[in-house]
Image 1 (tube, rainbow, N blue to C red):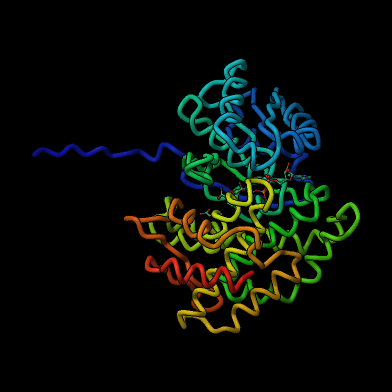
Image 2: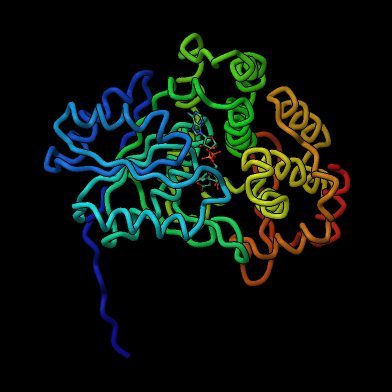
Length: 377
Ligand code: NAD
Ligand code: GLY
């Protein structure tokens, strides 16, 4: 036997900054110039059909002010369009433009646009640089950071076709959340709760003490986020710090990063079974966290108080905590077996062992899952 070693130079960016600042979209051009060393005078903004009309022009204007010509490509909004067909149309669009391997792609939108644009960029010419500009709270606190990109597959499930492709920068302008529908606001808070329960007890306590104010922002007409800019920056920064620490320690999810899947095993199943787009991702994750917590309580891993505490926080944040009655437990259990978290045929569950602590197990039986689902109706 002979062995040849391939040593890889640090050819891809190995660090990047997450900037959080009200009004940052207006500085997009200057930021992209700095991130690309000012070498590229052309960029592509990829967005969805809701966010493109809202913020696409402002993005292009800011790029033009920095002497960067940009084209906007959009695809239909919503999880139902997080597909290879959308990616294909975007690749067709890129092929018609003067795109080179170093042409920056600006992913402007929520988690769906960020994941799709990131994936499109990861594959085109074997990898274009991406700047993530998140516009939903969920994308600000979670999906824009960490480099997971991809699309859903109708049989294989959520995010089953994808790539790790880290952005060269993440630019977060909390003022863009002013137009966010109330339901989407709550979805971002669900991922924040996930970070608290799974990794940071202090953050969970902070969320509890600010829950009413955070939920109230969602209820304000026109969101009026500027009034709560400091609170929002604090919320986003705390989440980004938690996520950045995890991703830095385990970029490709060979260990620690899997704790970020807390709530996702059942969450992905019910999101897909409800029909992509009916139950929103953050809502499904919230319900998934409840089911995982009930499994942990039934096993004696966590105190029953934890389920009550989690349920009451989700409720205060405007999130559902109950599994929809129309989804049969057996179907949910069957779907969990398709999840990316399956290892050697066993479904991996991230179970809470208290606030800020988790245990990953692969021996949860179908009966345990079903019982926890029924207890969560
Ligand atoms: P989304 O991107 O579908 O956005 C929700 C809706 O809000 C869409 O209709 C969108 O057009 C609209 N929207 C976005 N920004 C808006 C704004 N500022 N004003 C008005 N409307 C706006 O959904 P999401 O909740 O942001 O993201 C969910 C997706 O993120 C899921 O596909 C999930 O798998 C993915 N995700 C990825 C990661 C990751 O690490 N890559 C992490 C968590 C979630
Ligand atoms: N949202 C899970 C992760 O980024 O790993």
